[in-house]
Image 1 (cartoon, chains in turn red, blue):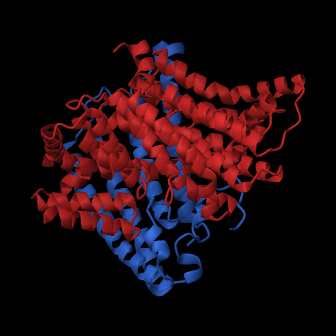
Image 2: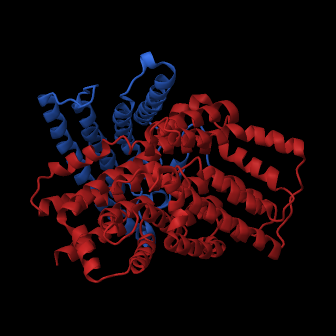
Image 3: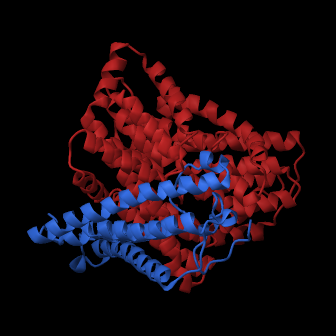
Length: 426
Length: 183
């Protein structure tokens, strides 16, 4: 009776439109009271969990992404992709895939990627005569690449909750991210020929070189981050701080997307974006703290072991569970709710936690564009004023591709694990 | 739900902007010091970044209430008629008041205990922990005030045209960048 009442309360509060950090915080408070612990414990757990330097890489990466988004970096990335893909049929669609992949290497969030790219590429594609549903679909789907290609906010959180090395997780995301980008690229290529999308004029070599030169400062950010982390020069949090400083610098000096007098305001906005995530993280960890003490994860492990589930059955069940949850909650909340329960079950069932991190984030990507409630769908509907149905129609082929890629990632672990094993050993 | 900026809003945002800028700088100084000026190198950057960012987040949570920026699933709410939304939102405000009131009260207890015990961080910096803990009651207090204002508006000054779900999108852009076109 107790657990059912609790679940009713949890989903009732969510349905009433209460902010997620409040729902989690209120539920944690109720659980603390029911189990006879003082309420001050909730406050203590919240403030103690925030006191983590690894966690702070997250707001700093969000800051970097905010500077990039308002600083004109997105435009430079679109320009360089357009310069090299001009003359190919449907080039703007291909540009979207490539520019999103490049942006994903700078920014850790899918919604931010979709927003940054959508505001530039959607009007451009519609003006050139691409069907609007296709334009929406390719932007929304390519935006999800942001979540697997490092740096990734989701993978940072995964590393904290499941106690895995964040640099190792970042490496694991690279090949699956590129596989996804490649699949999208191939589909857009094929679809452009099939539906006779427009051909852009070829751009002269001198112009190509000029545009590439101009994009170099933007492309330096992922290089600095990756060399810094994998060269062993800086910690993930230091890398995030450097990424924020460098992206602010290139935005102000090279692209001038905002005036330097607006800097403090843009930083405040970045902290605000980060704050929405951190508050959820803090209350969710309080919730997870209780969950671990309650012994639910241990029971789950025993239950699955007792029923002798094969690893593939377990993974399939998790895929389905995450897709369903993704219809109601966004990425951070799903991750923080489910992972504390699942993480202890991975080892006994023979699932590599690093492999699982990519399965997990990939599931979350699908959830982002999964009808009826994927977050990217609504972001796109808002910035394009298109009806949500049109967005969904455009995104369907990409959704099917993503499901296929998810299958490959789930059942071919070496795709994910090869790179981290190569660099760090197994 | 978008009112014009008051001095209060500007103070909050400027303060948070400064805290965020400092956090970035401290990280940069630590890395630059380690490789270029070893004699002036610092090693407490990550610790201080936590204090700066958590204070920033707690202060900005007030703006998050004001602009309806806290993440929430609003599918069910969206489907309700305006008057029903009004009372559900009022209830949400009450629940939020209880929680942020708790943050204020228990956060105060934690911070004042830490002050009384002169609790320091276990690093070389030996930072006074009450300063960090005080972020919790500060954030709770600011949210209590913002939620009281929000509750008051929903109960006494409800305007179905601007206060139903989906009319707070203008918080997307920071000040001084550019004004998004109206929906």
